[in-house]
Length: 220
Figure 1 (tube, rainbow, N blue to C red):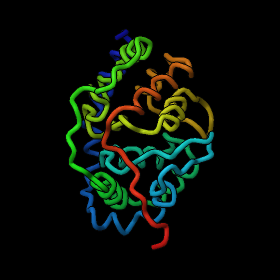
Figure 2: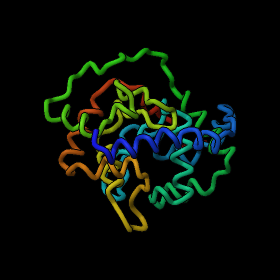
Figure 3: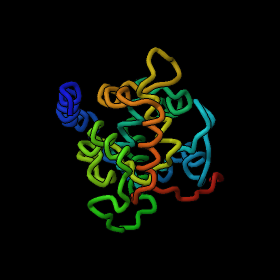
């Protein structure tokens, strides 16, 4: 790992404690169930596609870590993530709402299946080199489904087109509607061409993971 990435990952680990303290609100699953009407129109429809900033499937969030979902929503509130629709939704939520919705989706449709410690699908030589260059397992875990801290996302099995769009967004600067202001991921993503990011996204999406979309009625 080069010196810049070493520094960035040290900062990431140091920030985990501060982030945890900032998100102490205890989530209530049953309360969260009553607060997801604005979520299910996209995240409760298998294969649903967004059209901004380009066409891609919306991310699977059922089975995702509650701390990560909370961290992402707070980032939208602060404008660190710049998707206009998601920012508008996040800004309508209180700290308790975020905790409840996050707790709900963490357990939503959980199967309890044990994932392998290492991916069953080996990467190509090219992708293996890219994973090593980006030190991806340092945060997301050896199987990409058990990150070193729950405020980091599980990415194994996530939609490839979403992962690609998300990774590219970390490279965007000075755009009011697109981009993610995360110094660690920005430093990682900017090392790669878009073709390399697409190759990484394709590999990770094919791995076994906890993430899925549970069909939900939009009529409540």
